Length: 233
Image (cartoon, rainbow, N blue to C red; front, side):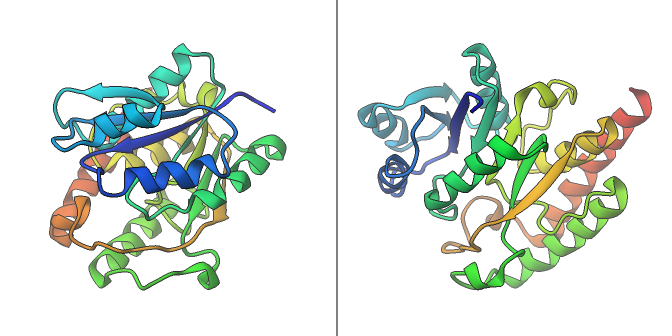
């Protein structure tokens, strides 16, 4: 089995982090890294108290920046794979072993959770504005990349670090997946999706605070940057 690190990017997740880490411990055999993206609440103190590894950003830099810090830390510690999951309760830790199973046997470079592959796993409806933006961007990415994606934005993923080195990833914010998929297709990374539950509990947190059209514009700008990279590399 390759050496695998679980990375949990967080921003002001003091209310949910203890429960998430407790659920992770029940199923996760390895090390956990929490990347605190400039939280102003007790999130970093909780991570220290819980005994997990901690990387801190002094200010909020964005979801992509937190992932990139996690990847860099994992590289420095000699890990071969990283699994990422959120700490807000929308990713079910019980599904972590399914990612480990795929890492062990699959030839993929990215194993991506999809909240739409198995509707029976859904634990509630998604907000209408998120649903149409996700559908529109997923359809666009299918055309641009050739990947048969069903869920462009699920953050529950496993990444082969040697493959990520080929991508020169730079996106700092929540449009990180746009850059990831476009650059991954350009260099020929192998991708597979596995079903994970659809869980929404707070429509107004994080990305949900931005109007749908604003999010769409941010995603399209990130896609344009990634496409320019493919033309120059």
